[in-house]
Image 1 (cartoon, chains in turn brown, cyan):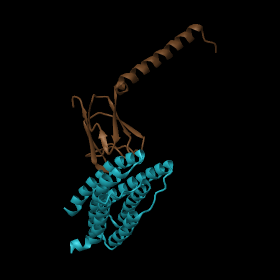
Image 2 (image 1 turned 60 degrees about the vertical axis):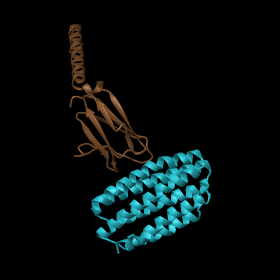
Image 3 (image 1 turned 90 degrees about the vertical axis):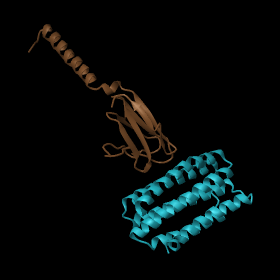
Image 4 (image 1 turned 90 degrees about the horizontal axis):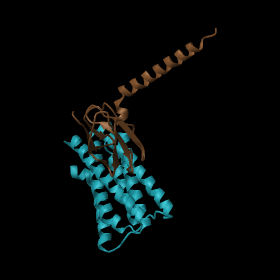
Length: 118
Length: 178
């Protein structure tokens, strides 16, 4: 079957429109992609800073710069938890709520993320 | 009676502190090779206590603490061995490291003789006392005596870990002993 040049032009425009609409929707549904990433270092058995304020859609990345393994775990319900982070490893969480967290390996190590407007 | 039960480990810990303080007062210093041997022995001793706890206890708090002790002290030993290998220093067993190991053997025998809640209590009490003694020794004797900067840096980074272990042990002790 032979199609006219007009058919191929219309098909191309249609495909481009779908692709562009799709990209636009993805971006709109994921404001976190534009959010900032805040760094919390784990050093000398402390979360530094131990308290951090972030905007909705921001992320927090914990980097283990200590001499032993640590993890990051939601304090009260353990709703979220990182794997045990070896030296140099990191874990990133998109923040949707104000959170209190600790290291279950060393429960005296605690930290807090405050969500602006929460 | 309670004090009598804890006597072997308390005597061992007291000896550890007294020996180190006596050395300091006499102006006798440990060299870096001896300090490396003492550091490795002190970490190894706590790993062995924790292994007994993992074997004998069913208390969740004790098991979590013991697992952390095994992992953390193993990590410290590995870093100490890596450093002394790099520096070309052979850990040099000395009177103190040998005495520490001999006394730890008595404490292990004491712990092996207990079970249930009595074991949990004895283990965590020993951990509190042991970490207090080691922190005192590292801060007041080993760090000041160490000449090599990298070894001194490692001991200084280990200190907050020991302090966190002590806080953790005291927290577990409160839950167990009440």
